[in-house]
Image (tube, rainbow, N blue to C red; front, side, top):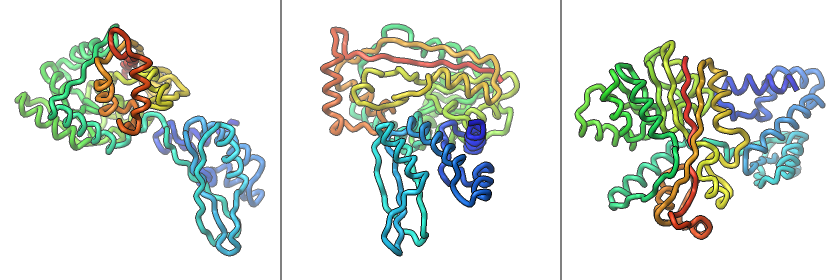
Length: 377
């Protein structure tokens, strides 16, 4: 399927996202399908084979398919074309939930497809509303005087990463992508020449500006912007760091990081690994990076190399993590994308199961998995 691979490659480059899969419209605009349709005036064995292979891959990545079925207004009949039949078949074969929506059309024969990607990995980094919710919850917890009680046994890589970053930015210009409320951005200021913190959350940036005022530092700036379009000229920074993961979320964000780095500059990131909170996610049956088709470390290595980074060094860390009570577990779930749609009332039975299953003499047990990336342009 060399032609299929080429179509996928071109589409993913166009969208800057490795998770993009083409719809019927994408395929109909591609050279191979246009040629086939013109040659045979419709669907061919070749285009059916392409769609079949695409669907097998697609349904590995989603939880539910939304199939929009055209209903002819003239005769009231519904039409399931060859493509839709393939999609339905693979949806059932993969055990996915299917929701059908009927839409009217004047066309004599028409089959439409719409697939809702309800569980694509790491889509939380594109959901501004989700992060505004997390930051609002953090502020509410602090206002109420609530403090999360947890402790780590083993090396999770965070302290090592922070030390390495502080050393790397000495006398240099650095960009912190996904800076949140800016505490670590401000910590870098003591050794860096200049630091800019960037986040797409208005609430987070407002808090970061407030924190900067209390520190009275002059070499730190905060900006409201998205990692998919960094508002800086090429070659602006010596170091780009990310402690929340958005810098390497997709090919597009990686290309942006590569663009704004100077030659010889470094990308330094620590992010969530696929095994993080795995025992909790198994109870919920879903969650951040769960289920996964590719290890986070392997994906980062592949995407960074494709964009052009060299000397890519990736380390993984896994440690035991314990929570003092189930209230502490709920606080963590309310302020992080472990389960992006978490609601303590809706998920109360699952939370009780976590408490019952994983309570030990040390606390409620889970694991912390981190992936540290250092890559040179």
